[in-house]
Length: 291
Image (cartoon, rainbow, N blue to C red; front, top):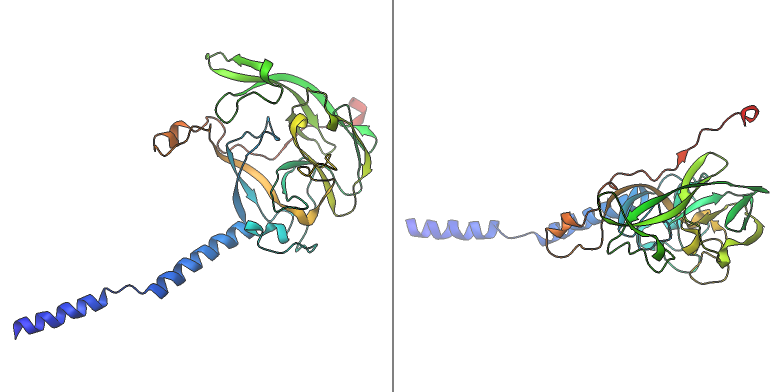
């Protein structure tokens, strides 16, 4: 009698231990949908794959892009699952100096560039200097800065070969000449422009309504709104519905030595870049009488 009762109890326990796969799959689907919604409407991570935004962004930087500053549109949706269109919800216009995520006009490929001209502006580039509404944008020579020299930042192939140096600690660095550029709203940031190349000169155009003009901070090596013909470029001003968000801050940065060895997950972190803001500084403007 006792053994029969035990057998029944064991059978019942086995039945209770069965996994409800439908509930598990439903829970996983809800979680994935929540992550997708967060990435599409609030913020998403972004990885820097190229040198076009040096010296402010380096290959290996990981950052956060917010999706709501300019409203929502097809390019806000993660993985580009939404069809292209000219619709916008609660749309607004970027400000001078914002670092934004434009989508290529012909491919579902995210770029990262800085806004340098707004709807209605006239913009030209002469010998590497932006001419905005007929006036040269302020540029000043700053002391050269030392960028990391590592697997993700090799200081070669971009005209920096002659700038290899060592810092005070004896570490190899890439010492790059920079300019400080300041836009009409006071947004100020560093740019690299020390080579003569085709995109240093760009005939004046007027930015259409609903568009912005964007450029990389590494002016010598950026396929951006200046590139009107090359398929890697953005082919002119970017429609606002093609702006998928605004870069906010760096979360961490990797030097290119990360491997499956967990130790490298720490040793490959670059120092001093985590939590750096990507919002441009605003320069103080003197009253006209004091200039």
